Length: 400
Image 1: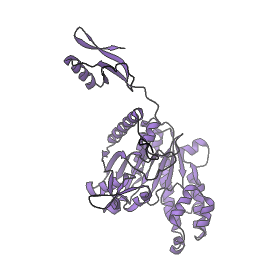
Image 2: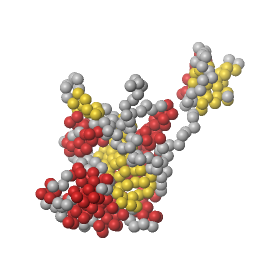
Image 3: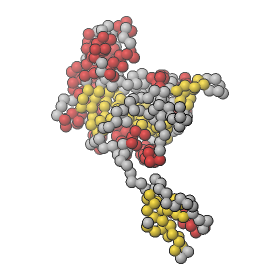
Image 4: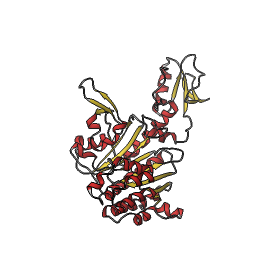
């Protein structure tokens, strides 16, 4: 095997792409700071039991594991940063009231999350802790939509779901009947909209519960203003007819409807709102509203988020929490190719005046490339459209 060959679904980032990623990272972190978010930087690896505590067990199969040569304990390379940020909020900061945190860094997946997905995503995101009301969910969705705008995405489909629906429908049954249904398989069949498999699995359940679970894969489509614009029937209206009017089900649909009809969408006209009530990823992780953002030409969601109020419980402090994360590399690839930045070409010389002129230009924001002897005509990423020349003992910038 060639020494330069990388593992499957792992790739180098070359100069033009790296520049686009880094510029987008800076814009997004500045955006989050303008909203009042503080940045944290969790470590790349932790003790496995800490990394996969509680709800994070959903990620166990995607976690690389290794043995610490110092302690002999098993460590994990983080597959997601949200559990780490929840640990920081609960155990290290330990503040009262609302805390807004953001982060950016690489995560590693033992298995790729989807077709064509990298196993080394660069994850960026934001979290709000300490507020259980819908206002925090609205801020998260607004900030995520603004992040996509910052990345140049003008058209996005936002799928909404709610993690409380299936537990409410299962609670209609006796514990003995629920025990006969494999929970993991149930959620997998719902996500895949596998009606024949789902029909077989839910046979032990009561008729009303069974019919409601079979209805979930069919409950997808436009909601809110998007439904009105398309002339179709609102998916949430259909859900109220097809699902039993249990208090938890009604509350979940009310939360989805409030978000769908929020005035915030007037600021995001490029967002098409839809519901997919079987999109139940992270069912051990999320506790309420969830959302996924899709853009044309990308097979996987470019952003995911939702409410996860129980994540901090394992760290000794249950906190209301909601947030989102984006895959920065995929998002950067959606941007239009930027023009190469103009630069100033400077000759190589020990002249003190030249050195000072170059320093002054760089301090003012200019890119100045010193041409090494014998390489003056070589091409590079930066297009030199000007040059430094000495006129009468003074170094001046001249157009090429």
